[in-house]
Image (cartoon, rainbow, N blue to C red; front, side, top):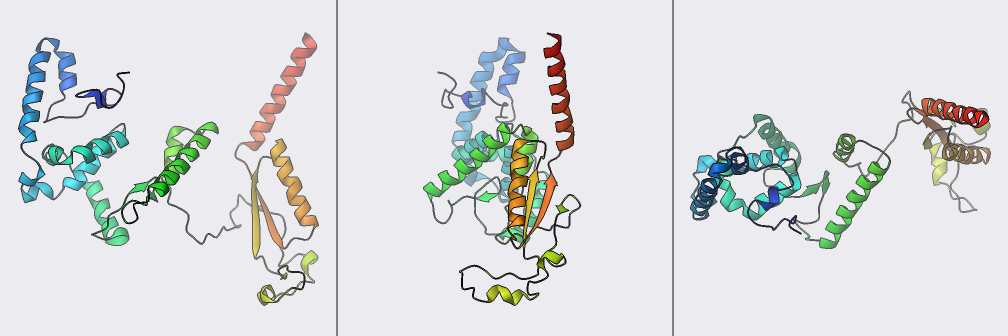
Length: 291
């Protein structure tokens, strides 16, 4: 079909927004004035031929100082950023002159400068996907690249299947990666703590010192201590079968005396969803009785 990316001049813009070329939007101009479409095509070819003989090496020093920011601004402003990034990377020497005449947003320049000074360093070189580093710059690990891309695509598919709006998905994917050492606080008001190992009488016979965790146990298990060392927080909707199964699992662990502090977080809208389901069931029953 003719929808591929390599379908001729301007074919890459068929599915996205029109890119500015040499200060003109030729496709828009041709649509507004069809009678001069041939002349616009000739002008476009002439400008492209002129630019083909001038690459980034002929730009002045002052035109190069913001070139990176101008390229980033064009990619960020595109409706299809990946396609814009691909086109820039493949044709950068010939697009540099046009980029140098574009805007360099001050906010973006300040953010780049901040990251270079505090996070990456001035000579940093790297590639990221949704904030995750790609193994390309130092290791050139193509298998690792495919693994990372597949994982990110699977995450997007799962979020879309769950009905998460596209804007929310984009915001979630932009979140920073979790640190290697992750600690979760159970003090948030949304967390309902069900037990306290340090205070409940059920655990009073356990030693109070955390040094007990280092003491060898003849049965190969860790020793218990009267501290909230381990915490399990369950996010659930008790009105669903899955939520009730999770509650049953929690009750079993607690009954077996597991050295764990348990907490639950009710899923957002759980009460409203249960009420809606109940109302829908009642309506269905009424309809059946009426039939």
